[in-house]
Length: 161
Image 1 (cartoon, rainbow, N blue to C red):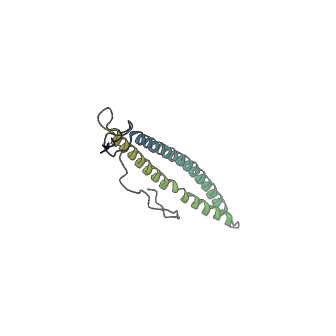
Image 2 (cartoon, rainbow, N blue to C red; image 1 turned 135 degrees about the horizontal axis):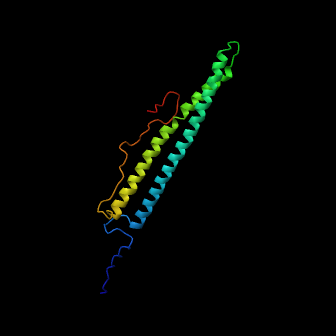
Image 3 (cartoon, one colour; image 1 turned 90 degrees about the vertical axis):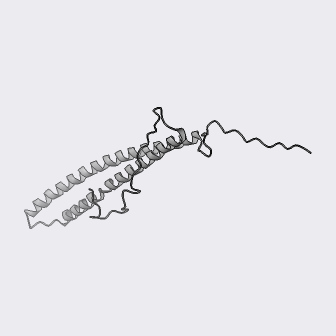
């Protein structure tokens, strides 16, 4: 009879966690890096949205003020009709309402950033253990699953505060 050798299981590669079934450390570190890059991109998006919104709001309020001044001048001369001016005021009011989009977008970006950071921190703590102080710092996850329930913008349908 020939003796059959039982194959020896391959040893775990050096980049795996000592815990059975755990994610390899290099994969976890790479995933954590991607999560942090996405989180930083969300922060940058938040700043860009804020800057653009601030510029647009200043411009819209300035234009609205100019249109109001024209309306008051026309009101002093009842013989002059200016339907285009009234239409322009309505367009400006609609534009300002649409700018409330920034508030909703800001909430969603902040929510997503916090969720990404929480995932990255938990991944690091679970795969790499505690930090030098013996305690892993994990960013708090958002308490609600979705901070904004709206998915469209209608005049008068958004409250900023």
